[in-house]
Image (cartoon, rainbow over all chains, first blue to last red; front, side, top):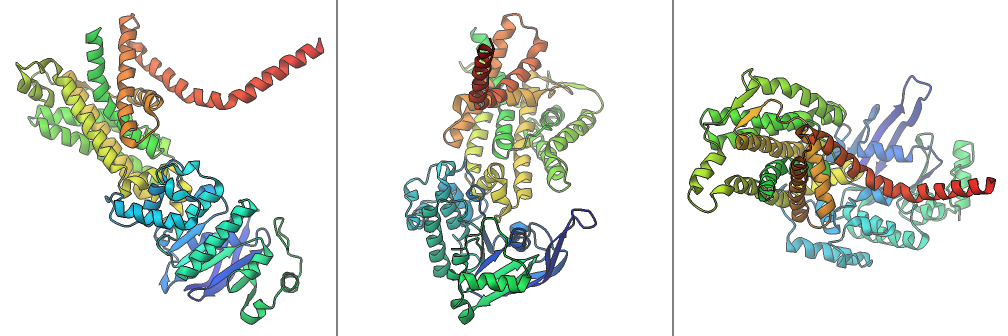
Amino acid sequence: MLRIEHLSKTFNPGTVNEKTAIADLSLHLAPGDFVTIIGSNGAGKSTLFNAIAGDFMADTGSILLDGRDITFLPPHKRSKSIGRLFQDPMRGSAPHMTIEENLALAAGSGGWFSHLTAADRVRFRDRLALLDMGLEDRMRQPVGLLSGGQRQALTLLMATFCPPKLLMLDEHTAALDPATAEKVLEITKNVVSENKITTLMVTHNMHQALELGNRTLMMDGGNIVLDVAGEQRAKMTVADLLAQFKLGVGKDLDNDRMLLS
Amino acid sequence: MLSVATAALELGLVYSLTVLALFLSYSMLNVCDLSTDGCFTLGAAVGAVVAVSGHPALSLVAAMGAGVLSGFVTALLQTKMGINSLLAGIIVNVGLYSVNMAVLGGSPNINMNKTVTIFSTVKSLLAGTPLAPFSEILVGAAAAALVIVFLSLFLNTRLGLSIRATGDNPDMVRSSSISPTFTTIVGLCVANAFTGLSGCLLGQMQKSMDVNIGQGVVTVALASLLIGATVLGRGPIPLRAFGMVVGAFIFRLVYAIALRLHMPAFMLKLVSSVIVVLALFIPYLKEQWPVLKRRLVYRSAARKGAR
């Protein structure tokens, strides 16, 4: 589904601030893969997402999504097949527009001059009801009135309204309180499994990294240092994971927000 | 007094088209379009030249077309050429002065005393009816109503929603399938079409047009917009758009009353600047006030303690 070949990116080359954010990284994802990613601060997790989304063009290498070369495609063209959630719940929706207007943009059906129809509203209502947050009764309220958790759930709904080929979750529950985070995660699991969306998820929760999905990547220094799946992953504990990291990188995993439990 | 209100309404309605243009570019797209002055004059110049050559209806279309072109250039500078949006507006504004002079054939003004315009046409149609003295207001009201209806429909289409999202949350738009370049270009083209029409109508209503007709229009329109947003700032789009017309009228009314009270006419621009400053400063002050108050209390307590 996703095929990244020898991707590299160096920021500020030739200056004192030179930083190799991604170093010759290759990654292949099978359709329906749900991959969790963990790594130290500055390991290149978010940079990898930015590269896939097209926020910057890579120095070398290529990115193929579902057989199509997207290496030089501008971000808004990639977004048609890539859904993305950030840690900040405010990033994914327009605060002064209503819930239904935000959803209309995400649904993206019809031409440039199409209006919201009654049928659209019924469709939105049904999907919102699945979130079980009462948002289906607040469709004409501006999104700015929602809580962070509600906004993140709405963003998730928007990102998956037309199931994308690839969903990228960048610690999307990290800024939420534990109960809400749990709920948003539950919704994430349902949406991904129902639509069989190929998913990449960055998390700082080691337990979550092993429990969710079918494959775990560990990143360091702009590359993938550990890639476990199947039998090996099923038997793995958090302690094993940490030990493996130390073996592969030669230092302890260092992330100030890492949850080891 | 009634004549003051009538004159304010005439001017307010014609200028309200520029306010509605800023409603689209400033309030929705979040771009402060400083090419407004030049574009307003461009609309007036093109409208005047086409009307003088004997095509009153075509003059309106031509003025809007010229506005679209001007908006397109401004948008191109800021999206495709990486120029800061304020600077892009200023650059286009300066360049338009030469364009406007060229359109006027090198002379700084055009007289339209004997020209058939949309206003003279409507006036002769209404001659003899009780509505005759209000022909200017009717033309202005019809234009403002058409623009409000258009904006209300347009801003709820998928394209309109995309333009609003571009202004509301650029982060969201960047990671969605909307191209901010495209929405900015469309938004500025449409907005400047209205600015051009506004200039065209003002020139034809005054039966003369001068190359300085647009000077300071952006501040006057911004002041009207901020007044309008204070009066009718919340609610659905049609109501907010109507608020822009109300804002333009209130601005003209206050100005006309001030003139009656012997304020010199050249004060207009200072007044509009002060209104804009106040309207932008008051929300900021409201936000800072609790801290400011605390600091004052704290200081006076400290002074008493020292004594």
